[in-house]
Length: 328
Picture 1 (cartoon, rainbow, N blue to C red):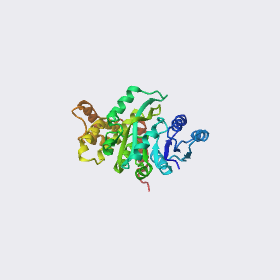
Picture 2 (picture 1 turned 60 degrees about the vertical axis):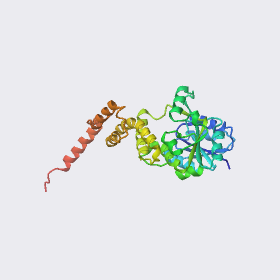
Picture 3 (picture 1 turned 90 degrees about the vertical axis):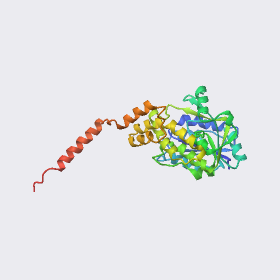
């Protein structure tokens, strides 16, 4: 039985998945299996995997119909046979020494449930974005002074140090946590998983680069990102944090709040936008003008679409016919 299961959920990204698989085969640590759960509506990915050559076991499951993000990942967690599992998105890649670097702290520290490293940001074509990579790792506290140390997991998830993929986790812990298939969480389910996983033990940050995050042409749109961050705001706000981390909790909410309001407005959730604005976490001193504009937008008349006008006219005609005087 393989020591590690590399779990890859996929959807309509056949060629990028091939690159991800090649990054798995290139690992210096070779005691692993690959498990793929495919939500694609066609068989192109299935055919590619069937023809993919690897010395390790490659297990593939095609879901008809698709399971959706949360249930797709959960299926992989249940299919994993390794003591540890690595979650890898189909458009991302692992660095050659990732598994070798990430397994050591889990084997040496019984209290650690997950390990992760630095992350490269790369273009769709695979070119490393040096400045963006450096700024991203610094923003999320993946710095040299924190390298090769146990991280307080409650703090790690609060400052978004724990990544959405490219990490190694104890399989039993992943199964005990699972992703939540909840519309209120939506695409923030990666972050939600991290928050709940942090209750089971500590994390370990390895100072080397473990994975590359691809900024694909199919990445979340600007609109989708704002809606996602609005969900993340309420997720962080509902989190129970130790007393000494309340400052970090408030700081994270202040960072999320302005974008969260925009996301709520884009999702036509004006009530939620108002809650963010008056949550006590909106940075009014720093964003007074922006906040004032957003507050005006909450109460601005909502434009009526032509489709809605047509539906209203049709409903009125139907109502008028139903109210004809009785002639009996």
